[in-house]
Length: 255
Image 1 (cartoon, rainbow, N blue to C red):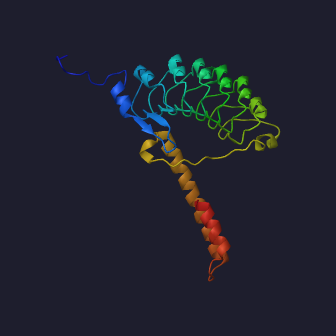
Image 2 (cartoon, helix red, strand yellow):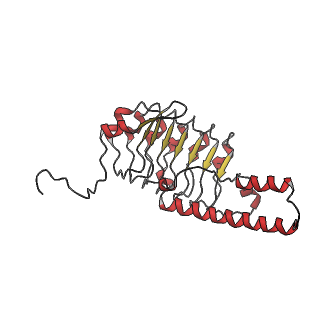
Image 3 (spheres, rainbow, N blue to C red):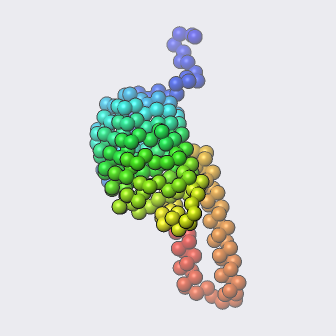
């Protein structure tokens, strides 16, 4: 290699320096300090960001991370941790020592049941947990201790039955278990779990290929539904001015 030339196509991924990390610091609307290192082709957890461990929020989503080190627990003030759309197969047990976590996003990784540590149950202040788009067959029983959990994403996994721990979460309000091979003799058992779709406003170029495809499919489905509804209403009130009640209904659909 010619002296002074940098090696191209470094297999270890993009290197993040402390200087780069400091430039990625942002302040949220509610005054929280967020370290945003999303969508930067990072393959290895950058050790330098441990010097910024006093941040409130950490975004490492849409990267190429395969492992999160135990040192993640140095982020003692962390309330919001986003690791979605990486290549993670396992979450370290040290996650259980991050007692201030309020929102944890692990969606769209390679997680299996064995990759979820029992220490997840120690996150007593957790309100939102997204485990969607993984390979999870069941949840660790310790998750029954998440008494503050309000929202849980389990969509697009390998669940064959409803996790028993769901019945032990008194404040749980929203659960998404769509696209799981759940088999049950009692359909009401599944219907008793509230399944909802959450809407997030993001730029398309921020989404991974899979997420963008899913969003476009949902948009096409909604367009067809609204078009069919409009055609039906038009035939019913042909030649008449559409009543206000119908206009309000159409507005509600578009919201």
